[in-house]
Figure 1 (cartoon, rainbow, N blue to C red):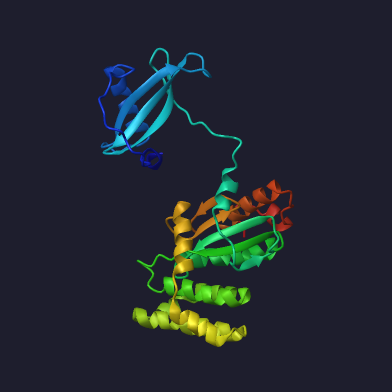
Figure 2: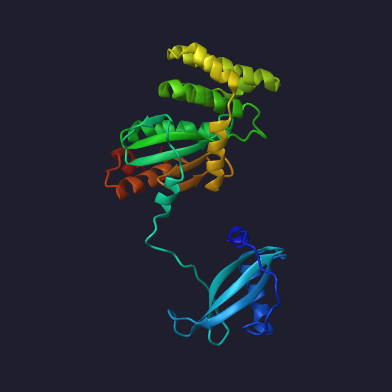
Length: 305
């Protein structure tokens, strides 16, 4: 709620009219909103409109402006006619499918798929190859795919936290070079790097040496999968960030701030999600599209793997 109240909308300057609820009641509303929604003290609360509610008898529709400097946002509440009760309300458009809208913002073109490419349920992971929590999530997903493999498709997108993970960006770009030639090579790389991150980082190994090790692994994986060596070497050398930057921008637009971020058909799950929680969401989404969940997942007790 706190973040919602701080969304940016320009506030027009001008003279302020007398409060529609009176100064004393407005002070009470100010205190209640700050306390209930843990608003920072610098957020201003101003009642800007009050009119009878057409949907709720005995209540007025109250419009409150929350502001800080030039930033502001309007929120609507219900105020009882006697001025003793304030109710938080939020209008939701049931004709919209927020999950479908989220998935429509994710570009999966050209990304390697694990599982069934034609599956009705899609799992997207915004991944950082150097993130230890991503490595844990990666292993969980591999385990889950053993029973869900033909029912779901898994796609990784890049969101390297280069400020704290010095070789993550290099790994993201190199993996993209492999993906251009072979989906199998990409997943081979993902498996190896997520399982051997500590070896890549080494003991106080310089960043240049860590990145060189990532390049070496990439070329080795490419050779195993009969990749065009010259094209792969050229791609690694170029270190083009075009696709990577597009992936990062896309993730930020979806509100991704950390990794791993798992999105199951538009349902976001932050962090290294426990296997039982992931299975629960997968089962729900499979049911939504008329696909039966695997027996093992359906019968698993909470916390069981």
